[in-house]
Image 1: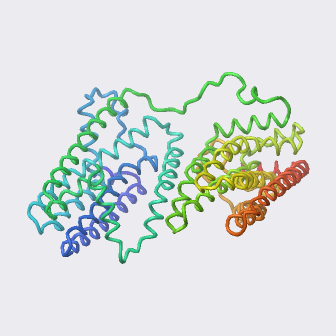
Image 2: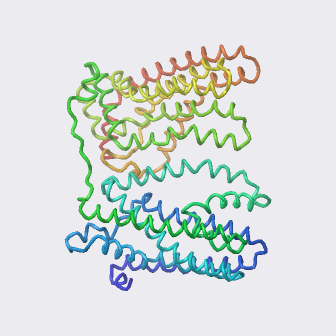
Image 3: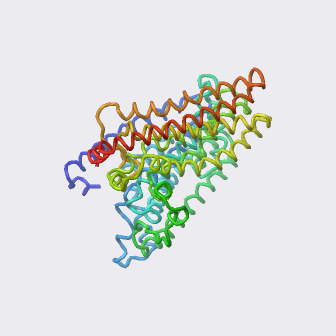
Length: 513
């Protein structure tokens, strides 16, 4: 710690800022724990501490993966020193105890003795809890960092961390939606007690639950939770030791370059400009992180939407009608800025004399290839959950219409209003600096235009469900007519614009390179 103050001024400033933040955190936590000592209901204090403590342990486990933290004491750096794996694992584990997060955690955990001082046995278990929770969190953090360095290349670590962050946020969205429906003034403690009742038997919360269980008179439960906490530390130590042994002899993970045999999509599709552009687009969608990162959340959209709508009081059979059209909406919207994604490579299309019609159709191939099975399977599932197979044609037609409307409008907007995008080879989570609101305006126009054009079919479907089944027969007709009209008009307009605006597109690409 002392050597840290000999670094560059900015590093020292960051260290001082971290220490100040830690001191403020300790003061606030100790104040809250002193106030909890005076709380009349032991069970409520127990529940709050278990839930908060579980979040802390989960944070130590997940944050290194989310932010792609570089390991200063990477075991690989000690490979040439001849240190035994067990001794190296122990030394690196102990080194994690002298960082600001571990010190702050230990002080806060030890301060729970104040809260549980009302019972001598609970106070003793609070001391044991503080002693156990620190190595638990430190080892969890070290393991996460080691796994990230072992299986993820440095070049892709931030992208992988971003994907993990997206998945975590999306998966906890239903939980957050549930929490928003709780009347915390009346039912808040009951909700926390329900969460704590589950968490106290997991490795996340057992270590925090021991003193509270003892203070509540559940000595047997406290003993079992003590065993869970000790076993958790033991398992984490064994995993950490095994990872150190593996990391020391494993070379640093580098970007894996796959060897591709044959022409891939270029060999599967027939010849011609349209097929060539379709093959190139499919290759990008499969290899370019800018595309697949954007599609990561698509499979979990239905779950989140159904849970959120159900928690808001909507019947499940009605909530089931929303996710599939939403997935098709985003799928059709994915190529609304596809020209900008090409960057300066767009000149290949321009100098080769590629017609705009071939360019527009070729770029549609990936979302169409993905969308067809999604609509086919999703429509059947939606009708089954809704409980009436009569809605199947209307649902399938509406989703197909939303997809092709999105593709048609995106074909036009990607040429008419391109805006700066992440350059090829850059991280998918970096965004270019732009002035003005052109990007937001282009996104909003292209997105809401799809909804506006699809609104007649949506209205007819709603009337068929709520008013008269006759409209269920009108909705597919409207979906087909509007969908193909928007697709044809969008492709035609986009092709004409592409042929006319070649110099402007090239200037845009050079300006944002």
